[in-house]
Amino acid sequence: MRLRYFLSETLTNLRRNLLMSVAAVSTVAISLLLLGGVQILGIVVGNMTRSWEAKVEVSVFLLDDITEGEQQALVNQLTNMDEVEDVTYVSKQDAYEEFKQEWADQPEFYENLPEDALPASLRVKLTDARYSEAIATLVNGAPGVEEARFGGDIIRRLLKVNSLLRSITLVMSIVLMIASAALIANTIRVAIYARRDEIGIMKLVGATNWFIRVPFLIEGMVEGLLGGLIAVLAIFAMKFAFIDPLRGQVGFVHAWIDTPEILFTVPILIGAGVLIAAVASLLAMRRFLEV
Amino acid sequence: MIRMVDVHKEYKGGIKALDGLSLDIEKGEFVFVVGPSGSGKSTFLKLLTKEEEPSSGEVYVAGKNLSSLPRWRVPYLRRNVGCVFQDFKLLPNKTVFENVAFGLEVIGRPRSVVQRQVPQILELVGLGEKLDRFPDELSGGEQQRVSIARAFVNRPLILIADEPTGNLDPATSVGIMRLLDRINRTGTTIVMATHDHAIVDSMRRRVIELESGQVVRDQSRGIYGVGT
Image (cartoon, rainbow over all chains, first blue to last red; front, side, top):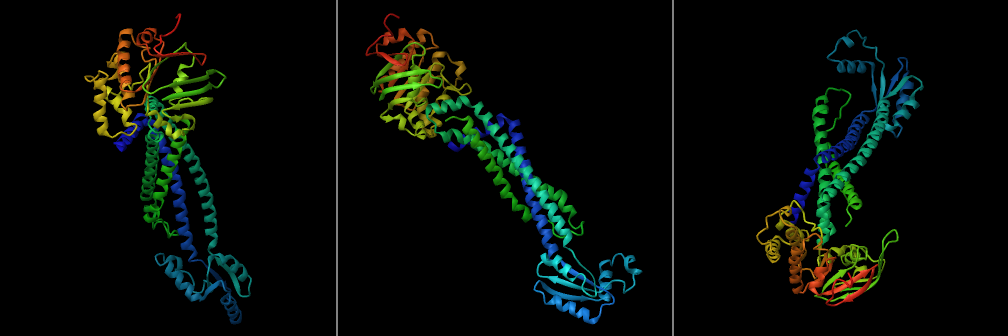
């Protein structure tokens, strides 16, 4: 009977100020959507970075007139370094074949290319992508070396943009969370006001404080829960609408996000929604419900 | 049952409501509290349910010292002290039955108890035929009976009535007083604040007169006042 009482009270309260509840729920949803966005962005960029880093190599392009001795010295120097895992020699012929393979569907790119147009190179595999810049600098300028290049530059820039984007979104999400807490507190305040006569009588006949409070607490938490569920649905909707169609369309991105990784954010978002709502309701009760 | 020892109560702003009030009320007594407006009657009644706390002095209700009663125990105190007011305080969107049942439900009484006790008490107050009426379909006297039923359904040790006949005509008031007298005969202590001379004079019960927060007269089998 008690549970039924609490639930019916909650339902009445929610219905009684529907518009305000809708406002509170949608603000919760938006703030949580941003919070979820931050997490998912983090996962996507993390995936991308990892898949790129695994492929990061330093390519040491060799001059055509490099001597046997210079080349051997370079290979020895690189192989002896702890940071270097493996050094592979790519001859002009190998480079040409690779190029041909890479652009197999667009033969006009290589048809007119002389077979010795591409320089020979050393491919240096590193134990960790972090060393790429240092190694490239070290090898640049060595005798017989035309240029050493590494692919980490874009990653670094991407990470910078990403961290800025995440900070901005996080701040926005926190601001909105405070706003949603205020809105929930307000719906609770209105609900308390609408029931002031009942509350007065409950106190009079000796209802305990928690008995009086629980319906309002449930009301707030239901609003938080609804907001969280809407945010989760919106995230999945966005995944299916925007991310999935792009998969495989944008060549340089190899690691998109998958459903299990989004599922991981579900308990976080719903938990955050309910928690914010509970705190907001309790604060509202402290202020507006003297018991 | 009720004991006050040198109770002072000063509200914010320096208004003195009670000024050294001491009294004892035994179990089963029927006590009228009279006195002009602002004499401290309401404050006195509010101390009994810990709605207000004394600035100094001790208040005992049903053997408990209220100043050492923790806040969370206050609801349990109130279950032993029923309250009836001049304005009835009924919920307009609930029926007679629901209004009385509400008082039991919110203190967690099981449904079976509610279903059994509410019709019983409404029978006792003479509203056995009007369970499904809403408060605005009842006369003032009937509404006060519902309010008394709600206060008494939990069988409190003490019933506090603050001007229960203040809004009622003399004939109806007599009916309400008969009801309170009946409740008193079950052993319930009744403390009633009133301005109604006729009632006090006809009942001939203990009268405590307050003035400026002090007891100026305490008379068993008393009348409303001398020279008024």
